[in-house]
Length: 251
Image 1: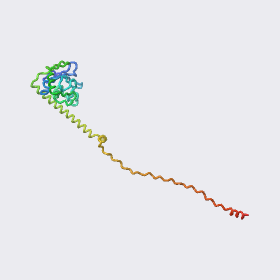
Image 2: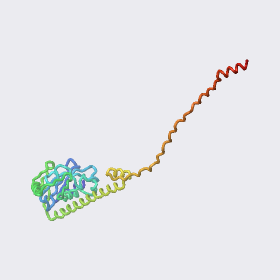
Image 3: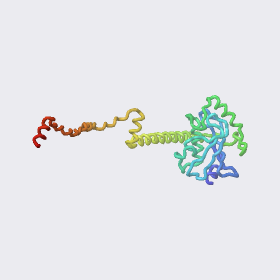
Image 4: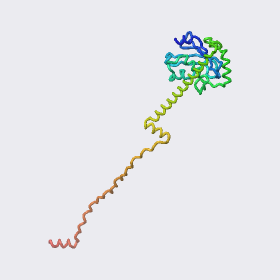
């Protein structure tokens, strides 16, 4: 790889080389940022490259005790695999190492893999780091980098500026995401808004349907009584005297 050739010789601030049997894993060494809790310390770690590199970012793992990053865990930074959305394919391993140096004095803010050791403890670990040696690649921190010169200040300022730019970019990404979420919420469908208002107890009352006039059911008509015909009145029967007279007249 071209970057392996460019980083073959250690500088005052960093170095990195691939393992002999695995080109997807590199070991790196960085100097603690000047005028910080890590000043005087030298720290070692691993770079794990995805097959899609440089289209996707590498993962960084710190191996040397330092008080800022957890050991043997992937670091959550804008230039690491945790944030592929902020990674640019034009960045290089040198960019990632300078950004790591620049981020060391910043607050972890609860990020994955971050630590918040006291200043005194970090300075103590910085002194001890010079005696640390990697069991895998054999690198010893005491002589892993070139001695400091005036040029180191320039690299240190470059690392600080890079970390500042990445932090600003990360903050802008968060603001844009929040604005997009608010925009989506404000343009949601009316049905969703009504449902949310009901949940919040602020739903507008739906107009009541127009009252319908009640129509009284037709009054039940009393059944008509059919009068049965009266039996014919009995004809008066002639008395016995009249009938006798009638018979006598016939004789």
